[in-house]
Image (cartoon, rainbow, N blue to C red; front, top):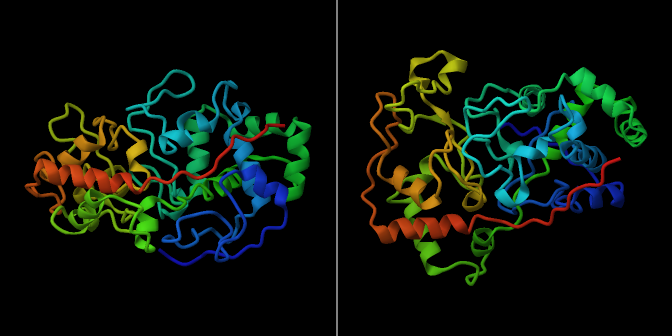
Length: 334
């Protein structure tokens, strides 16, 4: 991941309070996060500031951004569900259904491409695409609705020196999303020296994770993702298999491949996989540990690891220690 991050000082305590999960600067990054994770990268043309992220937080919760005023971005991303919606597939504004499971926006600022197939090259681009497709908006019309709100008029002038428009609304939303980063999970505390932070089973599970079970080959610490795309056999046998990454690259090797999700807070973000087909974390671990279904393009990293029931339980115990509980409060809307 290229180092493009800039260091910013907090200039207003009010903005920090609005953000909820953003606190005073830590190591120069400016946002509460796991000490195991560096400051998330950000583009030079959209640096994150507390005021901008606070504005984006309001917009994220504001249904006035949608095409019919019925659904906010937050409608698919809930903090207590690991910034997912807890559904296998979710409904769009207008009644259409998504064909893939809602991905978590936890730690989304660390990725280098977005969506399960990686088709969005910037977080701002992903925000705009979801704004149109998921909540059914015409960004220009939605911006006009936001611009008619006096409170937003003042905030946009403060942050951008301009009225709300399709571009700076997407920038504010992306800035907010870059603050949704993991705080100290029990495993982080254990690695920092607190031997009481996790159980013996969790420690054994970590040894399996980086060893016999082979999980760390794709779920690389500290993000617990490699940000790459792999076929894990889930589309095998379906009447209309999802081509996944292939739709972007047109490379045969990418048929049925999907981005490796981060495992931070995975125990609260089920159901699992790109199709939401597995309801429990234990079942997801068993599927992966058994090597997945047969598929001509399946990753060679997936093999039957021959884990015992106890070892599966230890892996689940370890994964539960990656859950963090940052302070978060919904914003007040203007």
